[in-house]
Image (cartoon, rainbow, N blue to C red; front, side):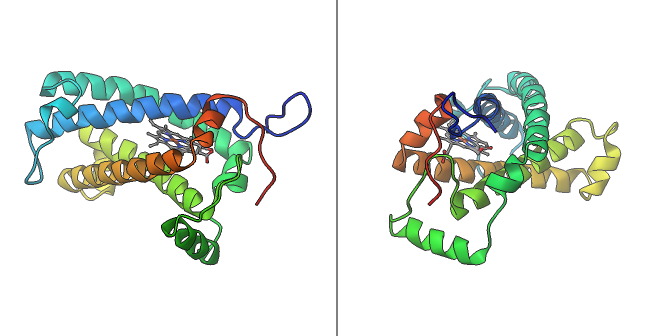
Amino acid sequence: MTRSRNGARAAHPLAVRIMHWVGAAAVITMMLSGWAIYNASPALPFTFPRWATLGGWLGAGIAWHISAMWVLFADGIAYLGYGVFSGHFRRDIRPVGMRALARDVGAALSFRLGHRLGHYNAVQRLLYSGVIASLCVAVATGLSIWKPVQFGWLAGFFGGYPVARGIHLAMMLCIAGFLVVHLALVALFPRTLVSMVAPLEAEDAP
Ligand code: HEM
């Protein structure tokens, strides 16, 4: 746990702030380049507009996607290791139960959800643990469809290549949905954005 010189706890430790922004850049790069790859052989009855893709065509999309994958992979391993061994996941991210979730969802829908820097409410905990799990499944299914021979056992675990591809696409939609809600919550509480950049002190628990 990071503490400032006067002993107060930082809202977000430096390690979390660095890993968050490296991971966010990698995820957004992967999503936009993934849309360029998807457009070359759409599995659903729609394509993404070319301006919203990174690379614009299959070859460049794959180059961006695989490059960013290594960044996300390294960042993800570091983040998972930090989260488990520092107690950050258990203390700050672990979902807190249906009653707290129902209370905070109700408060969020009526725009009464409060926020204390350095503490995640039940909605955030559910969203963060959900997106971390979705990212892990997205990386695993991605590896299995990228190298279906070398990672044949992994593709088999997911039910074969076409199913793994479908799950990979579904995880992308979950992560995109998370981002919409995540950015809306950040817009509602802009102070949290400052705390994810600068070493602001955590506030007292609600
Ligand atoms: C690019 C725009 C993004 C912005 C402006 C942003 C902003 C923030 C902010 C301000 C927080 C702290 C919230 C608080 O203090 O209550 C946060 C936390 C978090 N964000 Fe983002 N985020 C972005 C992208 C992403 C992406 C792409 C992901 C993953 C798909 C992500 C996953 C997370 C997670 C898991 C946390 C909790 C981190 C922890 O404490 O371990 N964010 N984000």
